[in-house]
Image 1: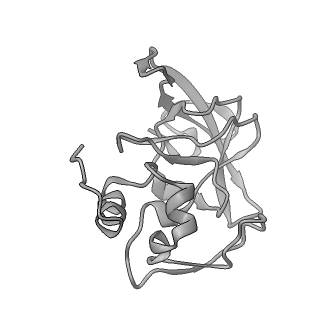
Image 2: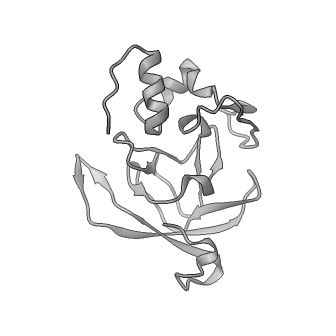
Length: 161
């Protein structure tokens, strides 16, 4: 769990500790601490940044509500819906971001995107999970509540996690 400004962790410079584990070939590795730093972000205000490399598929236990949106995120929901994991290999210094389309189906959500990636949708809405390209890109990597909506839309049975 991330502690704002590292207050309870006693880490200097506003760093906070996140707990995670790597999942490879379906086997859990032992938990290891992943240190993240909260600092200014070019996307929006402040963000969480990796202070070390994180391998694709490695679980990162952070509060998704603390993450900025990106249309080309560094984190996505794990296939079992239990939490977030690296969506690709990350280098130290990269911002931890998530695509809000993977976790929100709120029809009133409307966010102007500032991610400036080539995948940028400009405006992010609570209906973006319905976009076919978004469904293909994040297949199996939506938050459980949104994954069930995607499955129903595609006529697939939803397995409860």
